[in-house]
View 1 (spheres, helix red, strand yellow):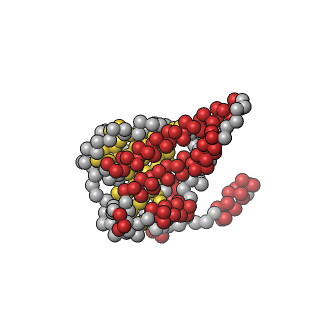
View 2 (cartoon, one colour; view 1 turned 90 degrees about the vertical axis):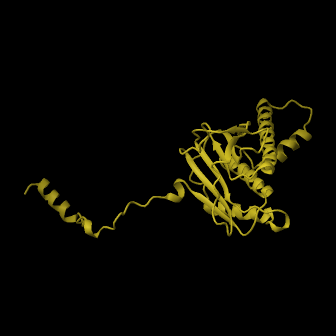
View 3 (cartoon, one colour; view 1 turned 120 degrees about the vertical axis):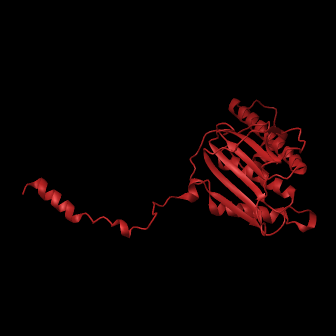
Length: 256
């Protein structure tokens, strides 16, 4: 027996017998990390929620995602304090060119973000908002990252019958902290962010631009944040009366 024949015989003796087809579980496939591929974060509030609270959820998520995806060097509130404090207490001295440039980028990013937030406040008073899209990088048709804020399952209430927004925000960000959807994403460079908001076609907004034929992208990394109320039977059908509107401001991040 040659050495090659001996090696082949030893390999066949050590190799385990393949499992018979009849013993394999029917339809078995390799386990994939579905929770990380396109994760969903679901939050169920224990009661009614006002439109103002829905707007606040959207704005806080917008600021949070911008910071988590490295489009803002600091959380929004810290950045606002830093830039406004620098502007108020600015001394009459010539600052380095890079520092002055960073300050201009900071002021522009904050101004655009504040304008978008103020216009969202108006839009939420004009119409119910089932969904909001945050499209990061690429184009609105083919973004690199897509963040869907799904509020179709929220039961809207008014006044004292609705939940206070502060504990709802704590519940929302606790769910984000537990899910940790950003940890597996690669660090990215600067990207522009476009916001699309769904509302009634006759809401008469004079700032957001209607996009009658817009369709939600299916490519790119997607994170869906589903917000709903306890006891909601199901999401209503908004396909006929509701259309997409695009914010005319494109948010551009900056880094130090």
